[in-house]
Each structure stands twice: as C-alpha cells, then as structure tokens.
Image (cartoon, one colour):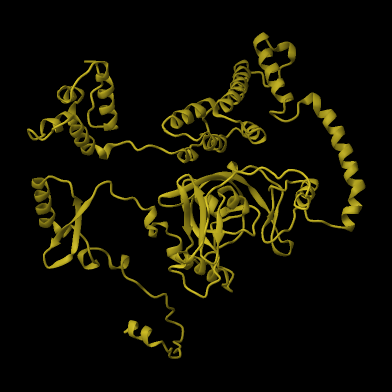
Length: 551
C-alpha cells in the first residue's frame, strides 16, 4: 500500500478520503479492503474516533467515508471565492515580490478563480503607485501578462534598494557620477533609464526640456482661447437627467459625445453588434404582492458590493454612472490611496457640481436564491450626504442587462439558469425618503436602526449544515427550547437531552434570569431635563383598531 500522510483530525477530512481512493486505483480492490486500509491513514484523535465505532455499524466504504466526513466537518476548510482576494493588501514594509508571492498563494486556494477579479484585487492592494498606474493605463488581459509586467517593476525596486545600500555603505551622500559606477551598477542604471523613457516613471531628465517647450506652447494656445471661453462658459461635463458626467459610452471628449449623439440619428450602415438574449423579462400581477398602494417609491435593493452585504442601494436609471458614497467606502475598510485619481466632476440638478474623490472597481452581486449574477462595476466615490449607501446607475443596469420596474418594485436580470429577480424594500425606500426630508439638516445621520443592520435579512444569515430538532428545556413552559442535531444516535441524543434539561439554568430568556448585573446596563431612561417646565400636550385621537392595540 502506498505511503499516505496520516490524518490527525485537523484539516480537510474529504482530502484524506480522496487520497486513499486515488492511491488504491493502482490495483483493483473491493470495499472490504478499502475499509481495512482506511485506519492505516489515521492517527491521534481520528484514530481514537475510529476505534470507538460500534461493531457492524459500517456496511460499505461509502458509509465509512460519510460518517468520517460528518464527524470532522467542524474542522473542514471551506473554499474561498475570488472576491476574498479583495482584502489582501501590501504591507508598509513589504516588497512587491513578497506581496505578489503572498497574493499568488491565496489565489491558489480559490477553486474557480476569476482572473478579472484577481487582477483588480492585486491592482488595488499594491502600494507601488507606478505599478498601479501602469495597470490602469494598459490593463493586462491575463494573470500571466500581469506577472510578467510585475517582474519588471520588481527588478526596478530591487535595483533601487541595492543602489541605496551601496550609497550607505560607502558613506557617500552625493550622487555618483557615471564614471564612479562600476559595470554592474551601470547596467542597472541603464535598465532604469529604459523604463523611464517608456513612461513607467514619468519623464526622463533628457526629455524634460522638450516636454517643457511643448507645455509652454500649449499654455499659449490656451491663453489665446481663454477669452472665448469667458464669453460662453460651459461646464466640463454634460448635464443629463439627474447624475451625469465621468466616462460612459459617450466617451470623455466633446467630439466623442457629439458622435454619440449623432449615432442614433443615422439610418445608414449596419446595426451595431450586441449580445443576444433569449430570455423574456416580464412583469405581472404576482410582482405586486406585498406592496402598499398607492405608491411612487424608488427602487431600493440589497446587494453584495466588494464581498460586503449592503442595504439601501438605489437603482436609478436617471444616473449615468455608479456612485459609492465616501463614508460607505471608508466603512468597507478601504482608504483614499486605493482610489484611481480623477479630476472630472459629476453634475446633478441645476449644474450642481460634485467633486469625485476617485474611482474604484468592485465586484457587485445581486441575487435572489437560487439565481444570482456578478459583474465588475466602476464606482465613482463622492463625498456627499445621502440616505443611500450606493447608487446603481445606467452603467451598472446595462452591465447586468437588468430591467427595473419601480411600479412593481422588482429588478429582473438574466442568468445562466434562468431569469432572476430582486425585490425592492418598500419599507426601506420610504424610511430613506422621510429621512431625506428632515428640515434640521442632519437627515444623513438619523436613520432607522433596522435599515443599518443587514442581519435582519434572513437570506444573508448562515444556515446550519444539518437538520435540527427542538429539545424542550422546561416542562412548564413549552416555548423554552433549544436545538440539537437530528441525526445523532439515540443513546447520545438521550444523554444530551438529559444534560441540557438538568442544566437549563444556564439559558437566559428574560432580564430576570440575569441576577447580579448592574441595572444601569439594562435600564431604559428618558433624556429629560428636569429644570424645564413640563408642557401638557393635546390629546391625540386614534382609529379604533389602533386604540385597541394600544390598550
């Protein structure tokens, strides 16, 4: 029998079963031999568990594998997703090579790695601004291309460090001349100069003079055109509907926007290519169930942005871009250094200009079990007060190929397995609307607690891996129950039930079950100023059904 590393009760139990099955494929064996060979692959706690198995309790190797995996499921290593790479950042003293090696090790743990998500995660996690700028200007098509480009910046980083060490060791604080470099240092210098000329680190000293002359010429041309701009001032971005500006399908230049506007007027030429979809996205009476009418509420949904579940995401087809508000961006654990710089603003009503702090690409998932879809969206981060966490504009709507309906409060989208839908939260939409109309100017700070806690959404909660059965703890109060696994053996289930019922005093049901705790921790007090004169309010009248509920 081939040598197999013994399993001691830690790690993935299914890997031990697969390793044994693959090793025994070299020669034909039956289930009996597999079962006899299985304890040879165990040690420690796992071996003790096997020795305690009741006689004649295992019939086949499949039964033994299932019982084994179920016993050690608590130490099972769960698979990671591509979105988990978004939390890997380069340390302050970590070199680019060390960061790339650590990132690659984590990426190998993802079974179905999405190269696009991995490349964006690596770009946002690195602290090398020149490397990040290169990836932004010329995005690589694969991880192989990204690693080849990273290798060049690693060589430059290590070369710069070596030069700095040499300068410190010789004690020479002045810059070396070309004659003082030895052959090896001169080769490193030539390599750095080559990368500078290719635009990796901005302009080289030799090209700075020519670039300065060109900038002077451009500045004189701008001065000649300045008077015309003063006579007819124009905003730097187009004003369309509610939120507009920033890079869209129309482009960023005036000529591209004019061509984009003329394109729909043309009747000559072939129709533009587009992806085909055979799914019909339909809305009907079933979509209206549970809604309160009359209503003109906005479509507010819950989605997953950057591996974080978010409530209060507004779906707005009047916005040309996707917006992520800065306070939300900070709460996600990011910082401004991870933003792609941007100097073009966005515009709203009456040409109101909002400065964009930067852009960031994040994976966004919308789902309604079992249908889900994920797309990479380019969010514009804005410092502005809002009752929403994010706004999904037309770019996000078109990326998902979704069809939103504010009347039905439903967002429908195609998936590989059929048509998925996400229902809007009418309660959340109205609470955001009421908060936005507060006259005291603090509406972005005063939001209902239930709109800030994603745990009330049952779909986002973790579910037990096995079936559970209730166990009554108090025969006088049937509502006091706890739960244990349904598939436990009858003797073990009886012993566990007796143990829980004998020690039912450790469970807390009300505040009276917690003696010894300081009352100030659980006592509700009214924030009333006793020096103020009490004012009697007028009696309020209620509808009969509400009055009955109050009583």
